[in-house]
Amino acid sequence: MQKSENTLVTTQGGSPQCKVSKCGLKPIPDIEVERRVVVEYDSFVAIDWSGAKSPKCGIQVAECKIGVSPPVLTDPPHTSGTTWRRSDVMKWIRARITGNERLLVGLDFAFAYPFCDAEAYFPGSDASSESYRDLWRSVDKICRKDKDLYGGSFYLQRNAPFADYLCYQTYTGTRFDNSRLRLTETACNKLGTRPSCTLKCVGPDSVGIGSIAGMRLLHSLTSEESQHFQIWPFSQIGENQSVIVEIFPRLYYVRADQDPVAWRHSDCLKGVYPFTIVNHYPNTPT
Image (cartoon, rainbow, N blue to C red; front, side):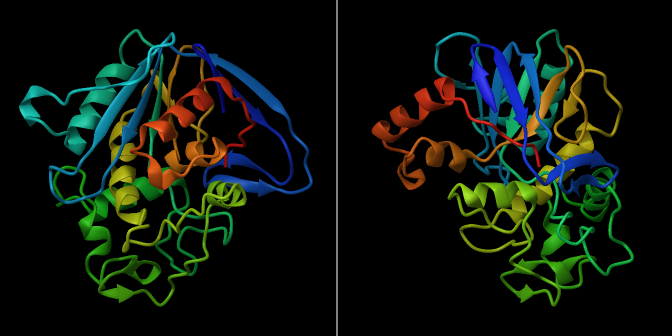
């Protein structure tokens, strides 16, 4: 993904590739594809997401306008006090993407579970979703009693519908496979970022809990068809549409040759920020 001023350039190339289908992304072997898409945006948003149960879960929203000014943190709505709730983020995104601006919104959670490795999200299960939208709908239905887009009902109990595929602090499902990675994570792993399995819901490197809550957010945002935005790479980007994408913050540090653990240090941030603005590198949407 390349950004210069208010322009985003995405480049696809290499083999194997993926195509968008009803099941999300499926491999197409032995096909060489290169496609460059130049898209202009009015503003760039990055959201530090959280799947924690507490309403004070540490969500942050930052926005970068066109130009050379650094990103700034956006205050939560006054009704929430000093912290963001997940429902606040949902309402904020809806309000912004239906306006006159064209936004590129990045969210740091997995948009779906691994599929390409086994041609199924939950291999062997008759209830396994057949598409990414069905997956989001299923997650939201299981967690319908959880407030503020919380995803506890999906993983807290050993008898949850798909717990057999998950790992949590009180159990490890018999079908849990820590080696299952999406193509996105496989690509990032080759770059040295060491991403975790999205089915893991325990430990400091857990990404599963936030992703479950995030899939509820995506379901809510897409519950009504909208011409104002698309979620990439599942949908084609239309003219003047805002776009929601998945981001992996650690990747910026690794590509800038900085230590992600030192993200609070000013020297580290100074090393990363110019890189995200002026360095261009290809990104294959998988």
